[in-house]
Length: 444
Ligand SMILES: *[C@@H]1O[C@H](CO)[C@@H](O)[C@H](O)[C@H]1NC(C)=O
Ligand SMILES: *[C@@H]1O[C@H](CO)[C@@H](O)[C@H](O)[C@H]1NC(C)=O
Ligand SMILES: *[C@@H]1O[C@H](CO)[C@@H](O)[C@H](O)[C@H]1NC(C)=O
Ligand SMILES: *[C@@H]1O[C@H](CO)[C@@H](O)[C@H](O)[C@H]1NC(C)=O
Image 1 (cartoon, rainbow, N blue to C red):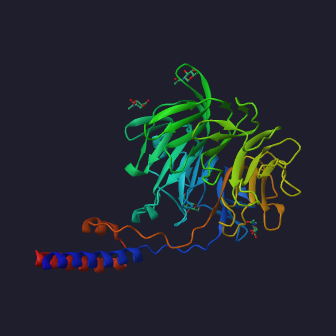
Image 2 (image 1 turned 180 degrees about the horizontal axis):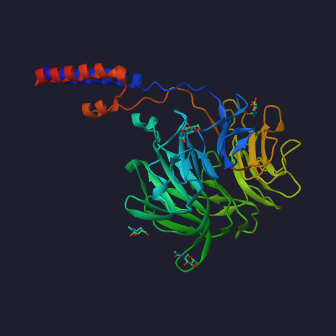
Image 3 (image 1 turned 90 degrees about the vertical axis):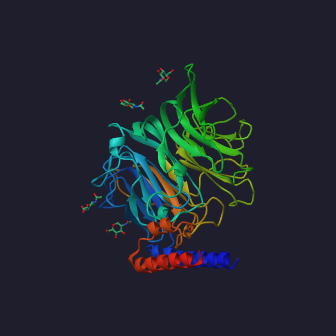
């Protein structure tokens, strides 16, 4: 009994001190809390500074910032995960002088591009990534603060890749659980415009142009991660965006923008019910022009239906629309943008959960424009007044407050040993390890 207690006490002591050591070992750079608009596209310079296809606009400092040396070719898609890390895909093959292939991940805590486990040599020349989606787990481990975070990464485009001994065509994903890139069951895709992983669900939605074995065409396909199989969804073509946010209505709902809906009451945008597969006009109607991007925020208007934001090209009208509750889509403020919107994001999913950017503020980009609607002063302003650039994709994200969540202590001294690398902890941990072994030896 005493032996067991002593042994347990030694273990507890070991873990407490080791954990403390581990925490002090991850002294991360402190980042001021702010909000950033990450931008990806085709540009070398902006405001006379070289960025090379990717950069961000800091809403607090009101200035553009570089992300190392950027890429050597166009960024087609940019997205951020729930931790604030940035993912880009495109036609590029390098980050500065480093070979990356058409995908790159920016670790926001260290402000650097990290190793994705893929390189240019894994892809055939001309490979392009056009869509990315991520889903992260809350379980954190110490190593993940350095490189990739604990997230599954879904990518698609026009590429051929060779990973883990198998070939992937146009679709590939990083399986965090297995810490490797894996292939999915084959899907005959001509192009893929968007991927949307439904949070806490097996479903991953893909928009684009697909054919089944009988040659029938579809605009929407769903991958079930639990059965590793594809389900084709009838009723749309020319899908431009698939937007899911758990605050939407009853959380069974997803908004889809497309050029054609079989459910003919829908125009521009349609509500797809995840539970029963039905299409409805709950997301309103956009009768002219086309929608390229959708966002949603709950709690802005008095109605609990929330507000939907759309960006696209609506002829002579504003190219950004907003619908509060069950009303009609209308322009936001005056002096609104009319240029075709390629990328759009808003601040907040629910009102008041944003830092440094009032909920309902909107950023839109496209060819030769980058405009921001500040909900604080109800005004649109242009963040760039020059030509010669295209911005394809953007994401607004809060810069998380430090520090990073605590690491999970490991029950195995050897793996704990491997994880502690900070020099100030080295002598301490050796001493601790020897003490631990000694106590253990004594009691046994
Ligand atoms: C544009 O460049 C000027 C001169 O370097 C700088 O002062 C200004 O902050 C820059 N503007 C933005 C929005 O980055
Ligand atoms: C970025 O550019 C700087 C200056 O030109 C160079 O020293 C550095 O090696 C480059 N980094 C990469 C990753 O290419
Ligand atoms: C992958 O593709 C390469 C080149 O086309 C081929 O040689 C190889 O056999 C393929 N591997 C598998 C597992 O299909
Ligand atoms: C994909 O579908 C199209 C249309 O049915 C067909 O022509 C093509 O051969 C298919 N591709 C593959 C790789 O099966």
